[in-house]
Image (tube, rainbow over all chains, first blue to last red; front, side):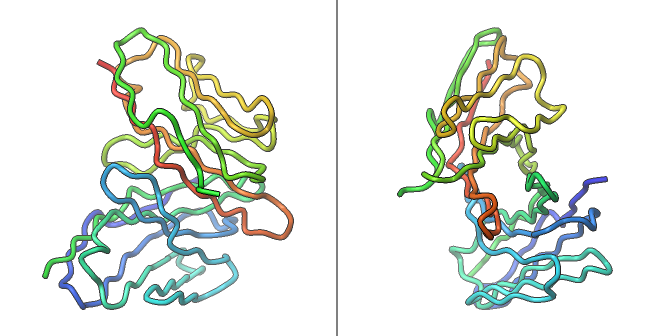
Length: 111
Length: 116
């Protein structure tokens, strides 16, 4: 079945690292994505990782993928107040590339 | 190119009325997707097109919903006889499938529908 789960809320202090976690169920996923959504806005692509990779780093963002446990994480280094938003992980389904999204993790950054 | 655009950004309608939304994808993107997002949830897949062909429809897409992409460029999503349960954000995304790319989907700003 298709199911993606995330914790609902994360609160961090400005300057600390944030780690947002995600678990998925479909082992045939091709790519796994992280999107950011600010209030009332569409989804902004942050980064993605191919399913045969373990890690990808992109400036302040680090994605870790544990295929055995079907666990994906997004680490944001030096978190800023502008990082406050809802973060969605999503898996893409083979052949159609339709995305299956988690429920989102609301990140709140306080000074 | 300025990305995926959607029109209108907001729509308020009365129950029973028909509404139509438009999505303009990134030029040269051959795939176009529609998703629906309700409050506090992640987006849910509705349907997608490759060029002008509609290749998959979710069971969420009842008979009151119809989508078209007549020339393989912009797309429209129509909801007939709207119900209060149709109130949601409707998101459009496009991607370039094949050609060795990742088929990464880029999203528009969404159309927020409120059915009174």
